Amino acid sequence: MSASEAEGERPVAAIFRTALFNPTERFIQEQAASLIRWRPLLVGLERKGEILPALKEGMILPANVAERLAFSATGRGGRVEAKLRAARPRLIHAHFGTDGLKMLALARALRLPLITHLRGYDVTLTRAALINADASNSSTDLDVHMHHGKKREIRQLFTTLGYDVKRLRRYQIGALQLKGIPLRAGKVLSTKDVDSLFQNPRTPRASFEYSIASGRSPSVNED
Image (cartoon, rainbow, N blue to C red; front, top):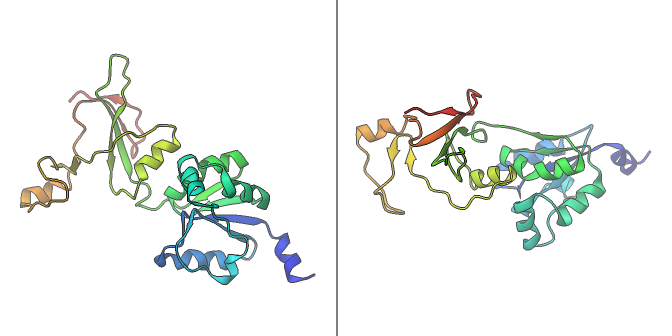
């Protein structure tokens, strides 16, 4: 049996990273190249750095910028979906939680298991509160508490859940209010200000508040 025949017998594991790859992520390539029972297939939305020779064959990327933007918005379509369908992978491995959100729709469409690593900075949404609700407890305003936010993380999360984010505004860090600090300006913090950075106050004017950490159902905020 030739080496190519043996390669073809290994089940395909699609390895997705939005950018293939950031300079600090060589470890992802090395892990993929070291697979024995699986044949790694790199899938991404843009190429940013050097790819190990063993991983270049069959690499899947969008055909152009328009396809990349469309896939980022919907998680479906274009060359990425077509090539991935043709490759018939047995699973999709998204290396970070935000990558998992991008591949969720396609994994569901292909009926494939989606595996991801949830690190501390991926699982950062700890509390969400409905504010300015009407009489039916409906609102388009949501207050989100995070420990650490990655680029476009909130937008990607709500897009995946089927909601269109119209506007995002950061109004405080911990209990430190940002009101009055001009855009791109700074502020000299007092000892009290520093202490307030580590406080986690409840949301003002919140009709319903949900704690991700405790798993509590939304309840009325009586404050």
